[in-house]
Image (tube, rainbow, N blue to C red; front, side):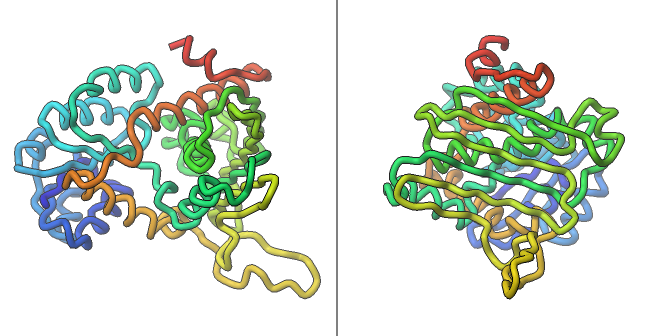
Length: 335
């Protein structure tokens, strides 16, 4: 099949490399506001360069991958759907929930499949955790812990436009908690602090946060995030039930050092970047998209799924700002 890519920055170029190695993909059509970025990707991974998103959509593509800046997501999703072309879009759907709701309304009855990029759904450990929960191996759940710790904060320009740590980082934890447990979040309480880069505080954001999520069956989920984890990129989940407990990410490249006498775990080189930690998941995610394009699979992460994680992020942002518990119903009603 023939796949278009809109946006050839860091993640777009990574997707171009991944797609160029998939058996199902015959050719790529690439476009970026910076023509040199598209040309560089075409030289490295093959493919044609188009001079605009419209040109990509008119180039006979079977599917399109949106990896452009967040502000461009709504228009590009809608344009692809109007052209009848299945679309994969990196999260988020839009910068604000109001915009996201409007995108959903615009495409809901189109019949054109849309997949939003939440790569943890394709990581082998998280897949196994979901299967264990769904099979009843853990019994009824009582506690979930989800962690995302980055080795260093992104640049100031990224922070200023990110929408905050809950919307651009924690949202991955929120999505995977929903996906693994099969439950919805009803209420949150969030805290945060700034002990590192001053530009994060100046942007009105926190660099380290914690959130308590109450799920609709009474399960408690604890989410921990930080922009500062010098040992590496740490993504883990624990799921505790009345019959058993399991962990995702407890492997030799875990960026955590044990100080127990005689313990050598973990023995490997710590993960130092999200593309390193989730390389296989990204490949599986885009393979799934080719199956969506081929019509052999339903979207594994819909706009509705992405918006559910977004409501949780908005609730945590409000909770941090106002130092109080916030229900998901409250933030829904405000849009």
